[in-house]
Amino acid sequence: MKVLNKKTDYAVRALLSLASSPGRYLSAKVIAAEQEIPYQFLRRLLQELIHHGLVVSREGASGGFMLKRDPDGVAVRELIEIFQGPVQVSECLFRKQLCKNRARCVLRHQILRIERVVQNEFEKITIGSLLRDLEAAGKVPQQECIE
Amino acid sequence: MKVLNKKTDYAVRALLSLASSPGRYLSAKVIAAEQEIPYQFLRRLLQELIHHGLVVSREGASGGFMLKRDPDGVAVRELIEIFQGPVQVSECLFRKQLCKNRARCVLRHQILRIERVVQNEFEKITIGSLLRDLEAAGKVPQQECIE
DNA sequence: TTTAAATGATACCAATTAAGTATCAGTTAG
DNA sequence: CTAACTGATACTTAATTGGTATCATTTAAA
Ligand code: FES
Ligand code: FES
Figure 1 (cartoon, each protein chain N blue to C red):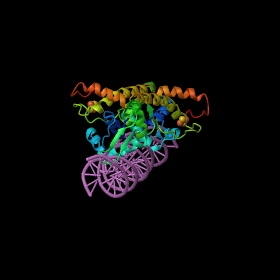
Figure 2: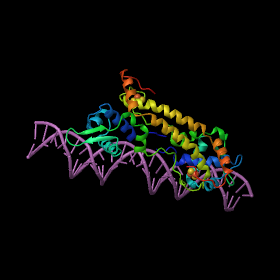
Figure 3: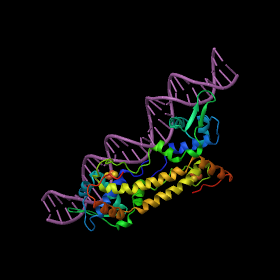
Figure 4: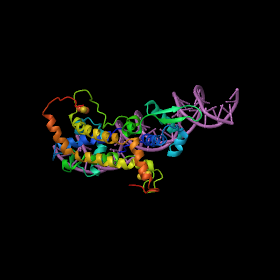
């Protein structure tokens, strides 16, 4: 069970780049290099972020992208919703109807609880909080992999 | 973000069928009808459950499948692991190496925590517990959809 | 005013995974 | 003997994921 896909992963990292250069426009090229994200893939992704009101852009030479909102207001949960759809357990064919299939329904009941737990956890992680973690970690150069 | 895929979903329901007929062999045909699961798909799935020691079978006429273990000992988490692989966040290219990409690593750190939370929740839900929920719910016939 | 460096918007492609189907061989109760 | 099963495996189809390419438009700066 994979939780985050590449798009969400890349989006988090791109937003971390933007958040660490507040008030400046970073080009897709620069972000791609900084975070090792495939250029064209990143550009599409940034467009989606614009459409969802998370970043703004400036066209033309020396243009680029800038974080629109407060980094602490951008939760990973929102990014998951944008790039992977709403956190749901398994689509239920009987929504809004009578339960033909009570067994599945019972499972759903349990699982809606877990959905809320997961959403809650991802709500707590924001670009702002990650950036702070990053800065704290930065004090120890060349750190080992945590796992 | 979809948590459970069809296979896991079907497996849970098939096991609920088996658990509610303890000591008897149910044929794939019967289970498929009872739970509205595609017959051949179900059969493959049952084989996997046999290989993982959750179910035993009897061949030949009036053969079928029977739950091998205590329903309370079969957690949904185990089913997720069987049919969707271990709960993981996003495969990390830098495992067991030095962190070239500290940003992603910081996210991983947070997310490994969430993994544990999720696993814990799914560990608590077992075929046995679901069956009891089901029986409790059964007292109210034709109940409405919970969501 | 020309040009190079950007974004905006799409269309396309390849690989992988998920979901479902089909077939044939072997087993067993009746 | 035979009908009803499981065991094993191969196949097909659809959807998703990850990535690439292209062309038009905008803009700062030489
Ligand atoms: S059957 Fe799906 S929620 Fe009731
Ligand atoms: S970069 Fe993945 S754990 Fe360190």
